[in-house]
Length: 506
Ligand code: SF4
Image 1: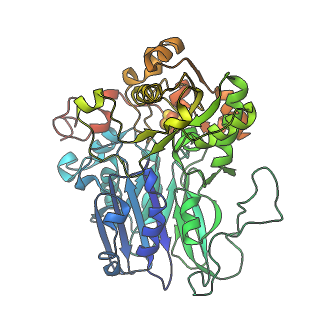
Image 2: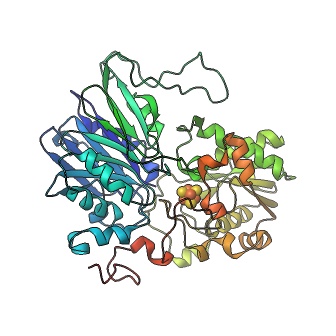
């Protein structure tokens, strides 16, 4: 995952806008946050480990001046969680100064490392993004856009990027468009005191997926600036209008006269990560014209048709299972209830209970609503089962709260294969669906029945063709060849890890 934002905003504090947009993308990464800003003369970077609001607070933002900014929040897929791996990465190279925010994961990291003169000694961290930044800073030629067009065809894997030098912000999507990136426009006067707040919906476009119409980026009226973001939810918080998606294989150059400039560096064939639509992205975001709450609600409807259950109530695993649970309840006619409360502050870094407390069933994230559960036959809707550990704990928690039956329904197909394109799913042997059949998983998690939504069910809910998506963690058809030694991939640039940095390259 990771969230990225780019802002060009003449006359405004771009760092503040970028930080605000990033705050709307906090769900995409909680390990570190940072911003790079330029006043047209020099690039300055501030970043640290922690959440967006902790890192980019009121003490720091006023000193980050300039009308160009990029911002990033991190969820690690290559390189461990340490300051050196936080982003934006920055490099003052012999050819240029460049900062990068990256969402995705490269799959030819070792080959790229072999191209860096001096190899790993030139890197302070161990992320694929730092390596990319170091390579980009050295590509011959004066122009950053030309340098990207020369370097990117050599780069393999998933990358949605915001790239910045002193004068421009550039949005990039890899030729498959695994990760999302949208372009938005700040209306002129958007931050005047009497400006309307929030996006304006188009009442003339009713229909299945209405409610998020695009503005024409070439429209002649004045613009207050431009925004790039991983999700439309970040445009909404800034009051920016959605213009379009950055296309796979495209660079969108901001900061030049005459508005955004499109440069194609490779032919594009979109295969957006379907997990973004099933689970990762915010439900108020739009992707491929689909509102994600509505898409997930329809997945729940499809699940009710594919896998009905005889039960008293339908409840979600909070929070992300809620839209599909609502759809399941509507289609099945079984009443919807909340049955668990999630502690919203139990993030990845929150203190975990000791093994002894875990064995006693202490769950810091979820608490049961016993009155809703006791004596009932439950349909419990979740959006995925990866290792099965959490699911098993949830079923046990519901049984302790008095559930009579627990019928587990998952609004995604089984995850059989690891992801190499920016989602930190486990190695294959840790994925429960790759080890056990359906009945084995049901017994392992302790449910009375278990069913997953089919790939056809997902596509039916989205009403889009399969070719538009990557489904590799479900069907093993990887659009880009995946790396050699799976087990060490995350730490491919890390010292002391078996299969880590290539001895010959260092
Ligand atoms: Fe998304 Fe799965 Fe493809 Fe990874 S392998 S990009 S998680 S669909």
